[in-house]
Image 1 (tube, rainbow, N blue to C red):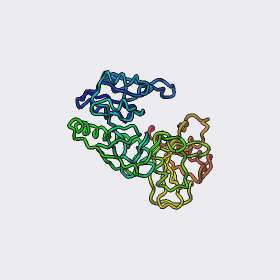
Image 2 (image 1 turned 90 degrees about the vertical axis):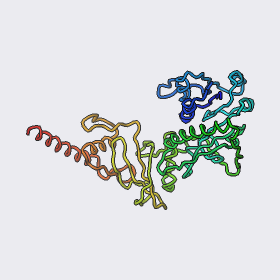
Image 3 (image 1 turned 180 degrees about the vertical axis):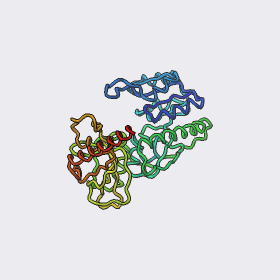
Image 4 (image 1 turned 180 degrees about the horizontal axis):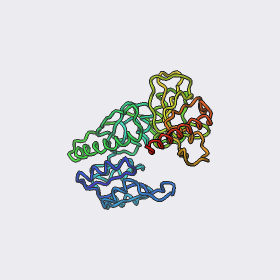
Length: 357
């Protein structure tokens, strides 16, 4: 069976790899055009292109599928099947009708729920406890084709969108390998989607990122998990935007929303218990500083971020760090500095005694 594979991001790599490892003939790969990436904005290959190039598979990157160029290429290849996994473009009808076995899609949700570009993230944002992948015949609508098979997995309580993405990519590869023999044998089912059960999962935007601590803890927890690693949830602390990549629900804390109850540790990262109003399970938020490094106590004396620097000093010498209300220390910075210097001095004396002995 001659297959043309269409896909772009990391999610599509496992299904393509599965086809190659199981001896399927992948005659060509279609993927999105190269894009600038990173701080230097260097042009980078899509992940699928990297894999295809490594296996010497012809790669095509049309900017559009509507001008007839892609159709001409596909007519020349004459594929038996087109497999689409997170390609990022809608196939026109003349391409959908071209292959002998049609065009099939591997979608990262249990259709008809979460049609669209962001099914993994929105399943977590909405607090779903299970998800999966669906293989389907492609139609002109957005993820509206007849379904072939589904594979279901649970969403773990603290699982992030990135972690779920990686699991579903592997499950998607397994579903694809089960679907193709059904197509070849003529035994593939066609189950109509119930549009009344459908919901849309649009692309994420930065407007979703800001945390509102008046919301229930579970909702904030899902927001943090669902938005990792982009656009990432955030909160404002001391005039700084702090991105939050992971959280867990605490069992035994209460208080007013937005108030630090206790700080657990700090160096490049510190955790806080943040109380939630009207909720028996406040969320524990892990906060990561970006753009500021924690200074070593014996270097970078002029570092402007005194909070981060002093906290790092305390952590270095084994002193606990406690925070009061949002943006405040329980004690003055000078008090913390005296404690840290005293502990460093005592440690230095102990080391000298040991060396003298």
